[in-house]
Length: 188
Length: 433
Ligand code: HEM
Ligand code: FES
View 1 (cartoon, each protein chain N blue to C red):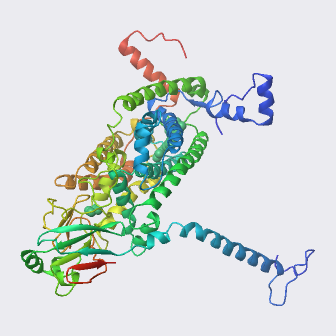
View 2 (cartoon, chains in turn red, green):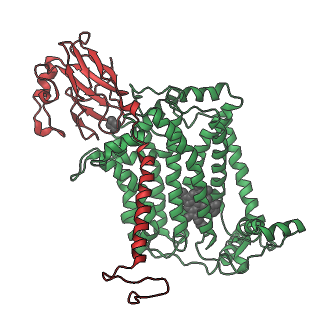
View 3 (spheres, helix red, strand yellow):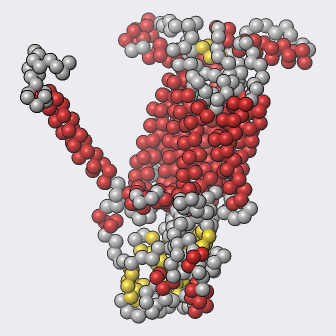
């Protein structure tokens, strides 16, 4: 019935064919839409980590007590970080693995700081679903690849923290860190 | 709604007449669960689980509300407040054991209720929507149970929450931000336990609402029955009250008896002892397994240990696990057989029982540690699960030749009676019901 140009309600068509009522409909719905989005946004963003959770401090680790072959767990952002002192044999074994055989190909050198390739610092969080793998604590099962072993669904990591077997897709994540001195590392 | 011979509500007193003419709730109840709701006369005990599920939901809501009065939803206080309920709160141990075991019992009932539907083809036209709403209820129950279990904040709670929310990080690109958003942090903490508590309180009421829709949808065609043929005339049905209120009442008493035995004498039989250790974000228990009712799905999640096509193992596991449930939404359209009840589907019946065994195998594998040969068994069982719904069921329902159906429910009932009476010899002269 758009042809009717004049009716009782004053819905006169302008030259460009837009009726007043069309304009009002569009304007009303647009304002209602924008308003709804604006009102829903706080409901969604409140779920994200709050300021106090985000304001995580960085953690300092003293490396001097960690003997070759040993590893420790430290807490950072409420999650464990593994700090491991690799033995020369472990380094040699890890370097001998052809990259093409890896699921997430990375060399040990890419995962450590230059000249510090014995210090492997990774998140202690399995890249599958987030369990803490075994192997950093004394006497824990290091799994078939002598690195870390996740008991949850059986992911096995090598001494460089690289995924070798099981459902995890990625190597253990290397967090941001720097050597403040030769024996002190600052994570975060 | 309902059959033409359904009786209408007649107020017995002036008071009820007064109420009914102003707010017709008495009329509504009468034709929903009273003498005005005709139900097939031949239902067997598998039709009692819906009523018991309703009871189980009420038990969860009531015990849950009182537990909430003593619970502290914070990462430092949650575990301690649960111990406080167990040791200090008057009758707290009873309320907690009833709520914890009540959840397990709820799932036992629901699994039987679902398999009843699978065996008797209750999901077929005209009851598809009842089935769809049922699957939705099942999903909501799983979400509720998962978040409730996390509230205890023991080792299994914490690592269960960590692993389940870890699923979301498998989604490409948005996965990790989504996981952090869901948790309100990088690992489960105060924000997580608080929001889980809010939602665990809310969802059962959502379930209650959806159950009402479930029963509303049920009341349009009325209940199916073990023969799967439609009600044709009045003698095929009996009024819900007193026949099925009495029959449901009987199994309610049995249910409560068994429930009481478990709550009072075996309260931890279905729980994991590791959950009596407070949550420790720095160390995962040597073996984590979900509560038994999630185990079949957990086994499917773990079945993918290798990358396949361009999708990695982790994402496959998550897809397979969700797909195993979402699949049920399509069931009414995958089964092409016009015959509902397995009693008349000799071939489908065999595969039904194979599926039951398969789901039990998956459940056992889900509880066991991820070693060989369990991994391999789990993989075969997971493949079979999907094969049942996606290959076997569509084919079987098209090629199978069903047995002849009885002409009516009444005929089926009487035929059964006369055959048992010729066997036992002396029941022939039974009075009519
Ligand atoms: C809180 C959970 C639930 C409650 C309280 C509930 C309640 C009921 C009740 C009272 C009935 C009628 C009595 C009976 O046939 O047993 C019923 C029927 C039915 N339910 Fe449920 N139910 C629940 C969950 C489910 C789930 C998870 C499914 C399937 C996935 C399901 C599928 C069905 C079907 C298909 C029927 C119709 C059965 C027939 O008439 O043959 N229900 N439900
Ligand atoms: S969380 Fe480590 S294998 Fe699943």
